[in-house]
Image (cartoon, rainbow, N blue to C red):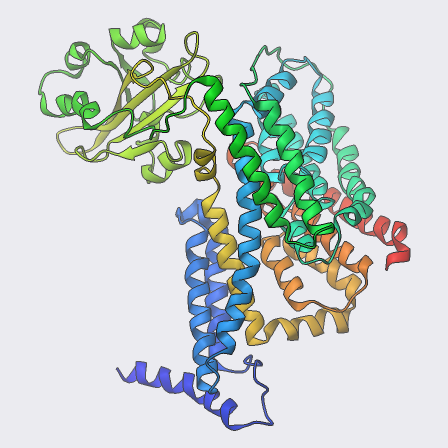
Length: 616
């Protein structure tokens, strides 16, 4: 209690001093108070947890949400201590408005991207690329070029994942090629996203703030090209020109796919028109465009005869789907005898993910005989075109709940009646003549001592029971938005807004932009964004709002966008590819080429200073 009382005294002394001294520290300059110091420490502590997300399995949104709440509690207490209960309220409203515009814009954009993915737009492009028979060097340049020109319309993360899937499919076991191609894709995606408001969150924030108009982003097109081409040319000499393994893959676009792409372009035009001609927030135009998608969604469902919305899990199956698993738990016979007696399709695997049992119903469902399945780890083969974990694999992992969520977003549930078991449903468009809706339940197998010795999975075909399984629903695509990312943005914007209200950003702005000069400061912003996420860095610059020329605003837009390419952890594109090309595209592999990437970074800045000299 004495410690708590002392802490309260420590917090109240600076506020009392500020309230009493009308000519000392100005209201709003709380940098020298305990409130300010604690706010900075809370933000640093929370942000240190963000890059450790994959290590500690804590979603990045959670620490920054806590930090944002604490920081604004401290601000409110500080102003209440000054006898001003209103300023904090108005300040947080301004930050909330900033976030609301960003949130609605991104929600509409993410929904369109998810809709295009559901209609096989990206899958069809990937299939076309991998079946062309290009040489490795050609694949290197084609994927880089496409990444550069797709990322201004889609986001750099989606672009990197799409092109990364192509190089991994074509490159196969050629780890050197895959690593170089992934580096090239990351650099190209970040560079392409820098000259478009839709290419990166930072460019979107700059555009929404009105610092750079839509057409003015193209002033940094040439510097962006240089940023990608310089390292790409150097790396291309290290890429062999041997022909890759031949692949044949065909993916058909689903009904309405081209219409969704067209409406997405119309939505972009609507958002730009709202901003340029009507002087309304671009987010309002994006939400208007989301209405276009809603109308098309209704038409697609009418065309496919699937107008009834249902929940994949609870609408297709109830707790009775777990009965085969409960039978396995309760019966004492040998496992192979139990599995053979179950009428549903069942397979089991050991802790090394090798199939140990594959019953007759499983043979009928998949068309794969037990003799070809047992002893292999190819339980994915009847359902997917490339290796990926199935539900039985995921429940053997550390923290299976998070792994299941990552692979079956919104299409799974934890068993209400069996410990550690999960239930999921998915529509497989390539199974059968018109696709099949398969539901599956999985649980770990344990020995008498409670040690996990494997996993068992039960599969059932629900296609006939629920004919509406594959319907297109815009609300489902909204639900698939990256909610962790959107909540992370909320935390970041409120944290940075809070530190700005304390007065720290004003002091940093004076040092960077007055003492060092805007060119040096904006160059350092790009380098900093390779270490710290570029979103809080750019939001901090926008909150500082330093007085600088239009050319300098273009420079900081460029550097914040491409600076993340210097390290693999410096951008969402790099982090995502490290996950999908695990063990091949690594932090170390990217670091080897960091000097060459830095050469492209410097060259892009010099080209901007020369090409846009009249704007500086």
